[in-house]
Length: 309
Image 1: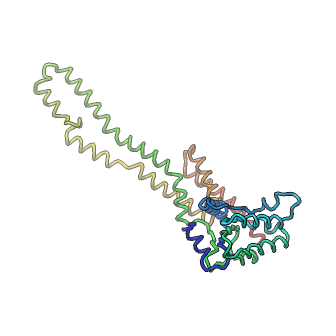
Image 2: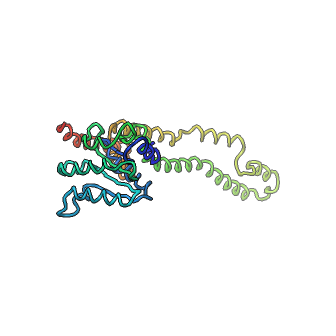
Image 3: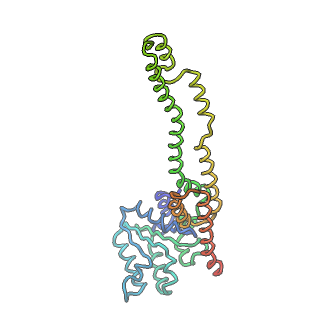
């Protein structure tokens, strides 16, 4: 599991440079989730962000000047954290001078500088520009490549959609199971009142004794009746078990159809299903429709990448 302790520990071990971490991969969850999570964990440190916005926020200032100023400011507040999210978003926008200045300043941060350089890149490690890849040593544990969620993780993720439906169905099933037990009690009480009304003189005699024997201290019927009632209740099919099997089939369909999907696309599908399932009568049709729609969306997005390759 990716935690702040083993990340910073590996980044600092056997390295002549300052602690540094590169989060990369085709799945952009490193920039949307892991990076902010690390910032939150290390919130006791002053952090400085170097991204496309900070590079071009001041009109008339060259990009290399913004890089120099940002790194100098970070060095004045040691120990500190320098966060560089989505480095590829601005790498191709700046000129060669800015790239050389940036890589030279990062290389100049040696072990004596108590600064963590956290960078994210939306591509695989093998596809990184050489200038960026050389800043991080993969053998020392400074590179973490984030992959798409596994089938087990996708299964756990999408099962959350059906927890509310299963709970409500369990409540309705419990009430239905209790109904045959509660209503006969009420009928027995009404029958007892009717018999007392018809035979008022025998209420304290043999008839009264016979009526009392029909109900024990808990107000239930004779053992034979209780056994028949229990047998009938237990032999009835459980709607909760049937619904559990349907849920497993739906989740399996989603997991099978979302292989190699990015986290962003999975989250979008989850949100769309969550909104429509509340008012949908046919869950199977809803799931299949949304999965097909997002599969087409993924295919459209992947087409330009294949043409570039």
